[in-house]
Image (cartoon, rainbow, N blue to C red; front, side):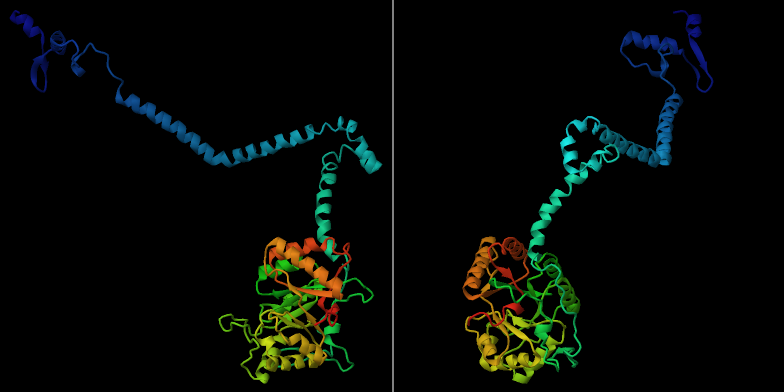
Length: 424
């Protein structure tokens, strides 16, 4: 190549002086390697989009999403409410559309005629309500009927409000029951009324250990037949309220006084329990502590006194105190050798004897068997007493048992209505 031609192919670089022409150098490289990446040295190759344009496009997308997010933040709640409001409108529209009430008359005429003509006249306004009302009442009626049956014997019995003036003695332990000057006895005044002319065999259920658990006690008050006698522990919290609620509903009430069990002190019967090791005056003081915790009860019982009730020296002072205060006694027979019942009979204290503890075994079948045995004993002796605790299963079985008790010829009676009827 001649010199002028070579110089013509050279370009002047201001910063670095002369350099070969970019196009010439690119063609030279392409001849050596047709697949070489020529980069910016190739003036003839198409250029990539400038970075600013790419950034501008990205920025535009970001701004678009940002604007959408901002709009949703400002108007999202309204949009959501509109959507939610729209959904019910569709379902509401379906409900009226489904009735086809005009066509329904072809099917329901028999129903509307069977009910009342007044209901058939305004089909349009009551179209949504008329079918709903007949469908709802039947289930409650059939479900509620069994629960109402146990109370059907005496649903509106009202107990004498307590305390009754003349039947209360003030003491440091609280109000104590006493015999009135006119001879009225607390156990008779506070008893649940029962018709003496009812000659059916009587069965009394004494639900002991009431007041230990608030949840359990509430459940028992809500579900038990009012003919069941409730025995509250004297150390229960808010005992006055529990007793008042029970009596207001119609339950006869007793106190379950803690007494010494066989395995005391490993088995603790509760505070101020009557103990065989204590002197009579100490036990009487403890008895008054229990008696002073509430008013309106008819007497006492105990489910824990398996050792105490078998000790004559310990039991006799308690029986004498009950007689002096006009109270009855229910021997729970925690010990088959209990002498509390016979001592009460000898002392002239109204007494009842537990024939069965119906939920010693908590299986449904076992409880049902015990209730049937009570029926047999009541038929043979004129009366029977069952002890129980407020377990949910026990309450369930008692309610079921009660549904046909009257049909079988028996009556649920308060414990005050069975005193002195049973044989020893």
